[in-house]
Image (cartoon, rainbow, N blue to C red):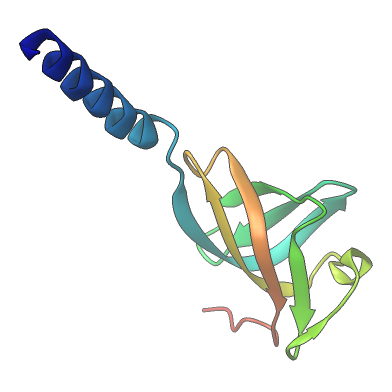
Amino acid sequence: MQNMMMRVVAVSALALGAGHAFAHEDFRVIGIVMSHQDSSIEVQSRDGTMTSIRLDRQTLITRDTKTVAAAQLEIGVSIVVDAYGDSTDDLLALDIRIVPPIATQ
């Protein structure tokens, strides 16, 4: 009985730990579209940082709360991207909002 209990505890600990191993973090990127390919965009933040963000079929793209086509992500357009990934080097866009031009400093 004690052996069985130890197995249950061990399996439970592994199951709980595995969730963290595959967890992604949420990121928000605010900037200007610098390039747009079929499945990714490059965004330049106000501080000059370039971030590559992948798009997929489930990425929601909106302007003024209305869904728009990915073709609206033209170079120079200001956007706010909510994405997830392991780091800023591995982002997948969940939601992209086209916003009025971002003021520069």
